[in-house]
Amino acid sequence: MLRWTITFIIIAIIAGILGFGGIAGGAATIAKICFFIFLVLFVLSLFRGASKRI
Image (cartoon, rainbow, N blue to C red):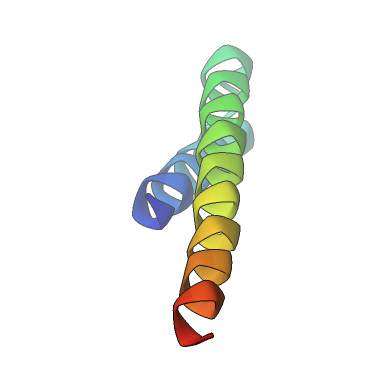
């Protein structure tokens, strides 16, 4: 999931530099969504790992 986020961020940056506004905005939106999904899964895995130690 993190790999997809990084991929879409790179696409957004390249598209932004080249002036493709719609593509950059779409890629940035997808990257943000992937990032937040990754963040939620990461926090859940931290809690799950901590509960197994107890």
